[in-house]
Image (tube, rainbow, N blue to C red; front, side):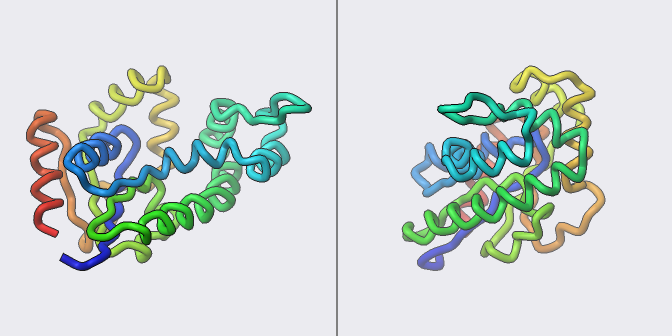
Length: 194
């Protein structure tokens, strides 16, 4: 195993990226969640100011300025131009922070990166693990988890990279269509192979 190996875990919304990351974390591997870094950035004053300018409808408060993430999500998933602006602003910050954290680790670090291919960031990683799952299971999972309608989930899926119709030749693919136990085992088998 390389001294420092950084592996991206990606896949469409509801595919099981977070479950894969949790499995690895529970097994003692170094893990980093870009979603957690995003949440941290939403509490950063400079980021809040910029987001409030980009999304005035999501601005909340005056003395204690903050932004409503749900309002931003509602806006960007129905407006591709706004989604591109948000991605262009936040993703470099998230990626930089996650890679800086990974550099502090010895051994393998797994980073959950939801927008890996959308932002063409795959070359920043030594390996890419793609989690795939049947569409109906993805929709049901996200509807339940995020309290969204089927239409809202499909809007988000359609705004993402198409994992079924793009070349993933240089990636490792794990299908999350069986039991949770077999999925976790496949994730662990991959980790042990590094």
